[in-house]
Length: 149
Image (cartoon, rainbow, N blue to C red; front, top):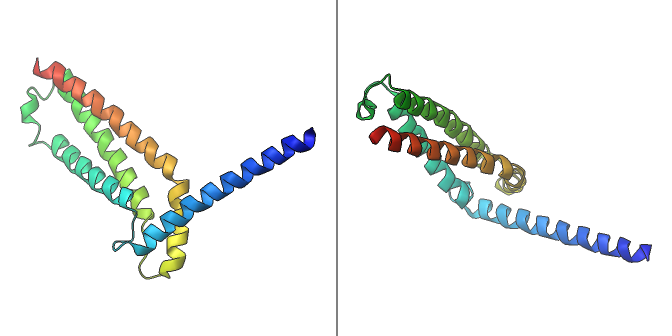
């Protein structure tokens, strides 16, 4: 009976290994073939994070937040604080995404394998940063609704 459980456990481990290997292989192949040395999903995330960073910069600068009304109101101060936090998170997300790009000066095949592995390992960090940015977006929207009433 114990042998049966060991066999099931072994089969499960083999399936996990094959699944993980397939993911690494597909990501490595995508990186190797990509013109800009990045995964398609990471390029999209990078574009969005760059846009968020720029919007937050504009929102926190002294000349771009007059539409919010009184600069000392609680809601305006809260929005500017959220924008500063978003700016930092967007920068952190951009740093992670940029670290996953292939260095074109190095061996492309080796770099694609290395970066595909790093992409899988940093997936949770990327998702966490995206989630945190989404939470801040919801809070900014709430503050704007209250401010504009």
